[in-house]
Image (cartoon, rainbow, N blue to C red; front, side, top):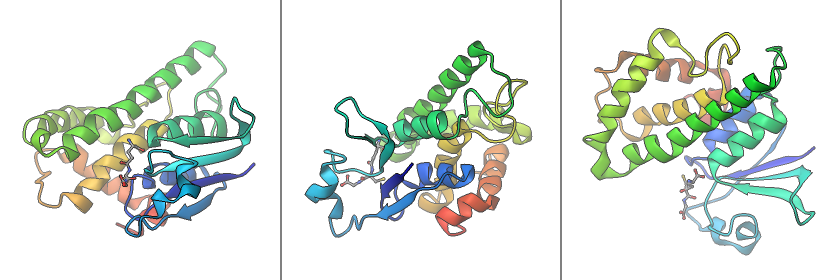
Length: 209
Ligand SMILES: N[C@@H](CCC(=O)N[C@@H](CS)C(=O)NCC(=O)O)C(=O)O
């Protein structure tokens, strides 16, 4: 099995890379120099024709054309890793109930899509930052109170799951990219960021930031 993750420094590739590190899944990290435009070279656009990072090549799985699987979009990469490389939805000693597995998978995709399609837009689109962002933070703060994992529950993922990876990666971007935002109205979000920064796997990827 060989996984190669393509990304750039300070890019969204840190999200699937953090997941790989947390789960101890072996992979090769291929860092592209985005400033030098390496992501526009043909060797990379053959993997992601949109010339964006991250992208993953998984040669343990064949695409419909018979070639190794090539994936772009950080959320799709996370779902693939969680399902096929970490067995996050059906295993981990949480029983083999297919209904539970389907629910875990559905909820994971809900949180990954929330992170990439709703939270990221509230954060990175300046016109949304004033109204939409505080609204989302208020709700997240309630959900994260007491250090709860987003998919905690009797048959959920007790500690940390791909859902936490997707959402908490964005929360932990806040002090890095938006240091001017006052997070004090959302103490559970602040505590989640601190807990994320303290994780060894996160530090390996982000260099302690
Ligand atoms: N929705 C995509 C966004 C990918 C994206 O915009 N990546 C940025 C880096 S964070 C990029 O490749 N920028 C270089 C460019 O657009 O030229 C994902 O989550 O993978």
